[in-house]
Structures are given as structure tokens and as C-alpha cells.
Image (cartoon, rainbow, N blue to C red; front, side):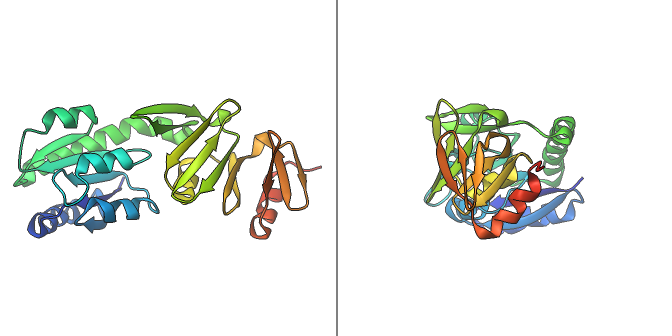
Length: 230
């Protein structure tokens, strides 16, 4: 099992040192190394990772502020030269907390902890988790997939519609597509729908909960292939 990871560290030597440690470990694949939370967030908007090596004191956004902006948080190992952030780290339920300079034995302990936690989660991921957690007003809300009717893109945010509520989340459609199950399909650049919630389809539109949703020409054939047609 190889875990994908990124490094967010503004100190050049610390960033290179951590990258070398990761690249020498057979269970890690480094997809990127960033000197700010902002550039890391731009990357994570398009690409999911299993693990983030995250410095706390960064220019602009801090490491904790970066975690606040993520719609879902992967495994996180915090790296810092100070110990005063330990309580805040606990609040964010990070996997581990490493004090700089990071030694190889301590690095390996952190990696093994991540691998163990990941292996425990495997039985759930094998059958496919049927839920997603979204961040709203400082807390994470559980949304079972079968409660989601459709999702609409609104620039930097998406709206997730259920029969009773609308949730606004800071994320991208591409990121959500990777998180959702096979019962969802992107039918238009601005819409993802739950296939089981479709009421009817006419030419280039479909209806879910009285909402008329456009179907793009590029996605029409995939939609029709996914339906159980007579």
C-alpha cells in the first residue's frame, strides 16, 4: 500500500529534508511540496491525497487555518519547532505531531501510525463508504449518500441539496466527484445528480425534486448508459 502525500512547509531546508525522508520510504508517494497553505489549497482543490505533512507557522494562512478550509481532512502530521500547539493539534484530531528537527526514527513512527490507521479503515473503503462529512459552522455534518438529491456548482462553492436542507461547501466539483459513490453522475459542468433521485428525463434536461437540471451533450450518453432502460 502506497499513500499519496503532500508537504506544506515554508522553510526550504526543512521542506527538502522532509521530502527526502518521504521519497526514501517505500510506502509514500510525494505529489507536491508547497511553501504556503494557499498554494497547497489550490492543489488540493483538484487532487485528493492520503496524507498532509503540515507546518503550523506559515506565511498568510496558518496550518490550522488551512485545515479549516478543507471540506474533508485526510491524515495529517503536523511539523513544528514549538510544542505550544499540541492542544490545538488534538482539537483537529491530527494523526501525529512532530517537533523539528525531524529525525528518521521519529519520522518512521509517524508513518507507521498513518499506515496502521489506514489499514483499519480499509474494510470500510472496500465496500465503499455511503456517506460524506461536510464542514458547516465549525462542525462536521454527516450526510448519507441517499439523502443527497443533487449538487450545484456556484463558483468557489458548491450547494448540496437534500429534501430538507441546502448546504454550502467551499470545494470544487472535481473534488466532490472523487468523494462520491457510483450512484452519482456529473451531468453538466454545474451539476452532479444522484441517479436514484431522477424523476424524468426530456431531451437535454432532467427533473429532481421539481428542479429542472440541464444535461450537457458530452454527458448525455454516459447518463443513458448508467440508467436501467427498457
